[in-house]
Length: 100
Image 1 (cartoon, rainbow, N blue to C red):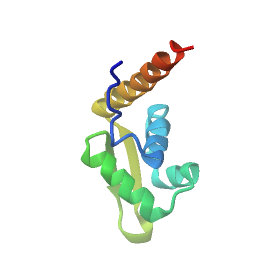
Image 2: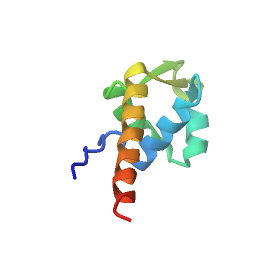
Image 3: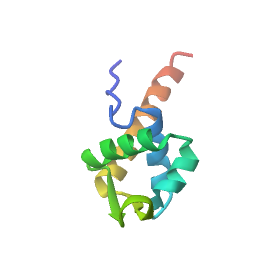
């Protein structure tokens, strides 16, 4: 039995929550994602940066300081990676079901 590796970028609880949210929305702002994920501002910022560096999301910022606004959108690459991740998990489950 061969199992593909899970994408290490997506195989993190907070990053996965972000991707689940962005996959179902046109975009989401930082405040919405923070409330949804219950993450701290610092941790959310770091994980958004990781997803952006991987090319999975696009982050747009406007304004400065307290008046700044951050909007996140999933990219085509992010959508593909997310679908592949879902399929890999489904493959894992289907392989374990055959043992019963």
